[in-house]
Length: 458
Image (tube, rainbow, N blue to C red):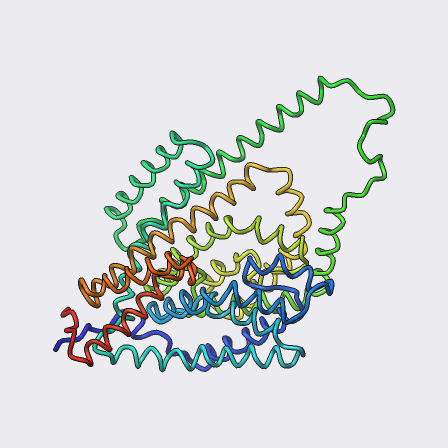
C-alpha cells in the first residue's frame, strides 16, 4: 500500500540550533514572568480580566481558569497543528501557554521555571512529534501544507471586506477589482513574489485614506457647528465644571504610569520577541508562518505589518483600561525582526520599539479617541481578518483531507467540523479545521492498521 509522501517545509523544520533553542526557552521564561506580574498577556480576550486581578478583586486561580478557557482551543487546535504543518513556530503555541503558566504560578521564580519548561517542550517535543507523524502511513502533516494556498490568497481580501463594511458596496467593489488586477499583474510580472502583497498594500492604504478623509470632514463640520453656537455666559452650563476629573482618563493614566515603571522589563521582552522573529523560526500569523517557511521574509513582514493595524486600537485600549500590555506589544516587532540581518541588531531594535510603544501609549489612546473612523477601520480590519482566515482554514482543511484520504478523508474532517458546530463550538471555529485534520489523520491511520483503508497515492 502506498503512503502520502513527506516533504515541504515541515519535513525540514522544527530542527532548532542551540542559539534558537536558548532563545525560545529564555523568551518563554520571560513571558511567563511578565504574565505572573500581570504586566502583559498575549491573549486579547484575557487582558480585560487583568484589571480585577491587579486590584485584588479576583484570585489567581480564577484568572488562570479564564486564561485557559480562552486559550486552550487555539493552543491545541491551531498553534500546534500550524507549527507541525509549516515547520515554523507561532504565537498561539509559544505565548498562550506562557500566559496560563505565568498567571497560575504562585511565585515569580516558579513562573519563569514553568515558562522555560514549556519552551523546552516546544523546541524538543515538536521535533519528535513531527518525525513520528511523517513515518505514519497517512502523513497528515504533509497534507496540512495544502492549507497554505487558500490562507495566503484569501487573506489578501481582508481590506476589501473592511472597506465594504465601513464605506459601502461601491467602494468595496472598486477595491476588489483593484486587488484582483494587482494579483494578476504580480503573478505575471513578478512570479517569485507573493501575489497578494501588492494587493494588500493597496487595499489597506485605500481603507486608511477613506477613514482619514471622513474624520477630517467630520472635524471641519464640527468646527463650523461650534462657531455658530452662542457662547454661554461664564461657561456655567459646562457639565461637571472646570475642575471635573474624567474617571476613564484617570484610569488610563494610572495604567500607563504602571506600565512605564517596568519599562526595562518591557524592553527586554521586546528584544526577545524581535530576536525570535529574526531567527526565521517564528511567524506571527497563519499566512506569515507559510511565508516564513518558504523564505519569503519581505512578504511576511508586509503581511504582519498590515495585520498590526487591525489590532493596534484593541491592544492600546485594553492595555490602558487593564494595566496589562501585549506580550508582543503592537506586534510591529514581528516585521522588523523578519527583515533585520542580525540577532544583535534585532535585540536593540526590539527593545527600542517596545520602549517607544509603552511611552507613547497614553498619546496613542488620545489620538484614537479623536479619530473615530480610523478606530472603526481597525476594528473592521480585525473582523475581516478573522472572516477571511476562517473561510481559508476551513477550505484548506478540506483540501488537506482530500489529499490524505480522498472522499473518506473529507467525510471525517468535514463531519468533525460540522459536529463541532452542532455542539456549540467546543473548539473555537478558527482552530476547528486544523484540529479536525489531525483527528481525521489519526482515524485514517487506525483504519489503515485495521486493513479498512488504503492511503491516497501521490
